[in-house]
Image (cartoon, rainbow, N blue to C red; front, side):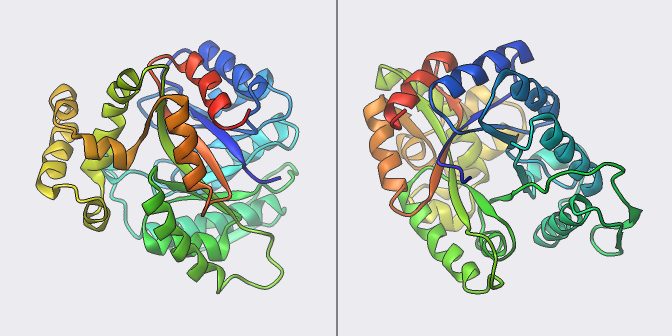
Length: 325
């Protein structure tokens, strides 16, 4: 089963609210629910356990964990526990994490591509029942799981060209963090490069766009809510991405500095309309439907990610209408 219409829920509110939103999303026709993973929010795996209990058929998983805050063996075991608890509905979303967030924890994000790839290999070996011996970027000495689990599909959270190519070669799918068709078309070319090196006999690859979405009945309200996500994304965007959308690199850097300093209100105030258009899908259900249709010209599926809108419960219903639910 591939991801066609997914939604991301950020556990920034009490988990009872997340549980309620998850049930609403399943009833609205979404096939996958991801939980975002940030140390400053509630624990994503606890949230996912609550989501599993509140739903019956949706796939669910972290979107995405990183192998810096937690050891890859521990992550593999947590994901396996979710697989067991959900009756085989789990997916494993893993990526390199946000450099600025890791820096706040005193963690250096060294060799991200190699660390993610080795983490995938460790997890797959553990799920197959193997004892893992590895001395590399990831070290594991005789690591095993003392329970059996059905292996999970692995989705790599990716933005850069090398990570996209690696995901296409080695993983089951990619969660590409972008919201504009121009970026998705660029990523599709990188994925094709990776698929050209994919081992024969591998399962079909799933190209999923994890897009920041803000939807509301009124466009102005949706775009206002989108400013926060646009600030964070613009502040951390690579120069080629800024160039692709004609965005002033100095302004983006200034916004990034303000976000890093915790001066969020000042950062949001500097977000330009082109930044919202480039880094979010923001507007009425009609606007969202048109952008999703454009994205699907190159991608297999779409996950609607935070902020979702000024009213998250209402946004789930509006997104269901916009995406054919």
